[in-house]
Image 1: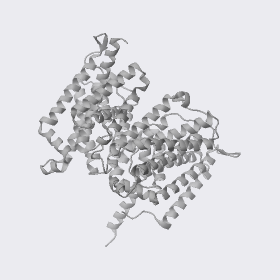
Image 2 (image 1 turned 30 degrees about the vertical axis):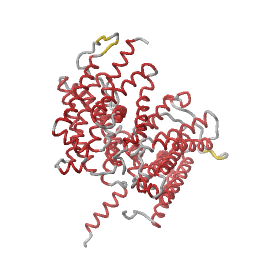
Image 3 (image 1 turned 60 degrees about the vertical axis):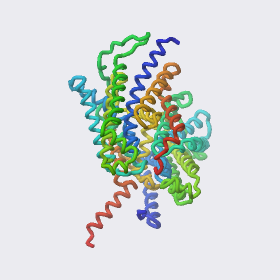
Image 4 (image 1 turned 90 degrees about the vertical axis):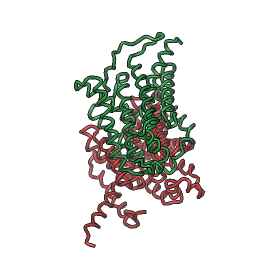
Amino acid sequence: MATWQLVQYVVTGITVGSIYAIVGLGFTIIYSVTGIINFAQGEFVMLGGMIAFSLIGLGLSMPVALILAVVLVTLAGIIFNLVAIRPAGRASTITLIIITIGGALFIRAVAGLYWGRDAVPLPPFTGDESLSFLGAYILPQSLWVIGITAVLMVGVYLLLNRTLVGKALKAAAINKRAAALVGIDARMMSLISFALAAATGAIAGVVIAPLSYASYDMGIMLGLKGFVAAAMGGFTGVRGVFLGGLGLGLAESLAAGYISSSYKNAIALIFLFAVLLIRSRKLMVGEEGT
Amino acid sequence: MMPLFIRGRGKMLVIATLVVLLSIVPLLGNAYYTSVLIIIGIHTIVTVGLCLLMGYTGQVSLGHAAFYGIGAYIAAILSKTYHVDPWLAMVVAIIATAAFAFAIGFPVFRLRGNYLAMATLGLGIIIWILFRELDWITGGQSGFLDIPTLSIGGFSFHSDFRFYYLVWGFCIAVMFISQNIVGSRMGRAMRAIRDSESASQSLGINVTLVKVKILALSAAYAALAGSLYAYYVGFIDPPPFGFLFSIRLVVMAVVGGLASIWGAIFGAASVRLLTEFLHPFGDIDVVLFGLIIVVVVILSPQGVIRGLVDLWRRISRKLAPS
């Protein structure tokens, strides 16, 4: 077992783990503010990658295309909230699950019709000449992924803890009625949380697409893994989901490297059940009345 | 509660009409209609089980295609590889799938709401991966060929015409059984659990046991439908048992009305027919399904038929001079 191999797996694990963490961050934001698990979260990631691909195809320069893609997906998140979540009002959990599943189905199928079934590549941000580190090869894009994740995590942390909007979001998450009494509009907070989750999801999509391609059906597994990351973090705060994502990414990459890559997705599912069952009592708080 | 749409004698009339209509169709001799209706019948059986679980008991399943697939694979493997009589293989498939659901029910129902949804979604994907990866038993991605068909004595259900009556016979039986369960003590317990778990518990209902039993029953229905599918088509491979089919089943249940046994026929039929009509245009049907379930659960959570009836009543009340 060579050191370079281990280093290689760890780097891969941290890279994909970062993505899971960002996707999980979207789950965490929406869930903590609205109590909704957004089953369409993975589709925001897919939209980010695919829209960026199309915009680059239109001849836009890389940074412009990426930023525009994130903006467009954020708008999609806002529209989704306005047309599907808001009209449901105070619906039951089952209804909300069906609504976000319906949204995911819709987005995915439209993407499949528009972009087709083939995976599409995105050029790496800065070349694809790999760097050598302790005998392992690291693509510059991996560094971008890790760097952007770090910036994003810190950014969201500061947004939630240091700004007025963030404090309002937190207040709505802790106690909706009390928040309403001090003039915090719950519907507005729900809207902001979806916008934020869509934006972070789209960022995950545009940074990972150069490494793993983008395709119309990437949303389900990415969504599931992001959910696992968020559940490992207990759906509270940035730090938990960050560690959850990294843990899942590392476990997956090490298992794929040392055991077999055909069961790579099974690792995430085993993590899913482990975390659900271990945390089942803790997670159920506030889930009565389905 | 709102008044029931059809009840008493009216209900029997509707059902009788339905039965007559259904029995006429294959006599028309159109092979295409017959085959579409066979598939609708098979899907209806699964949907009824999902309605019992989601609509009446209030427990989400986003992985029901797994039970359907397990039933299909067990029946296929036993009858083909091990030369077990297809009927016996079907019974084994149903019992084994129900037992599996019963066993996983206890840990799974420690979860509620969103987490239950995610867990069933994950379970569905795991089972699907197994269909694909255990290729020495299941044939993997290249599929499982030459499944024998059902026969009684020398009477073989090899033609669509004969299989049609078999499927719909099972389908009607499943609906009657379910309707009876819904009207029984068990059915009241189910609805109590849906409305409030703590209240049901305080009334002495064993909440977990009821949920697990209903999960096992709906898994048995799914396995029945799956084995019928395997015997009908004679070939199975993993794609029809994946995540998308689980969601498709949810669409059928929602369109028919989550808490409506007879609505399941309407749900399964509309989803299938929409897919058939829109087939030439690619995946437009899936786009519509996404839209439809969002619209239906927001505007008319009791299903499309009930929604339209209510709408018509409201309009006629407004038009009528008071």
